[in-house]
Length: 50
Picture 1 (cartoon, rainbow, N blue to C red):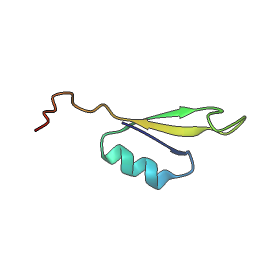
Picture 2: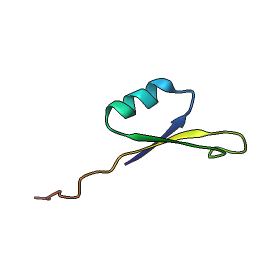
Picture 3: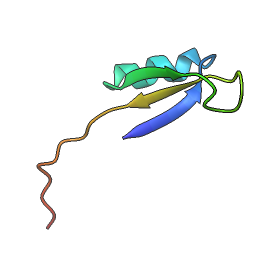
Picture 4: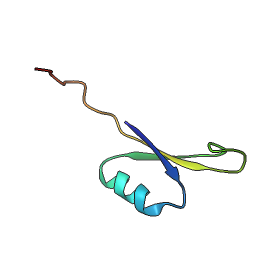
């Protein structure tokens, strides 16, 4: 799972980290000089469908 937010949005970053997301700061992701926080979390693959 992946989420993207501004690096200034500390509330969103803290929320996602509390859910187990890892955070990577990516420079120029939203244009030159505009870094973003890319949050990602692996999901379990052992899912069964009815």
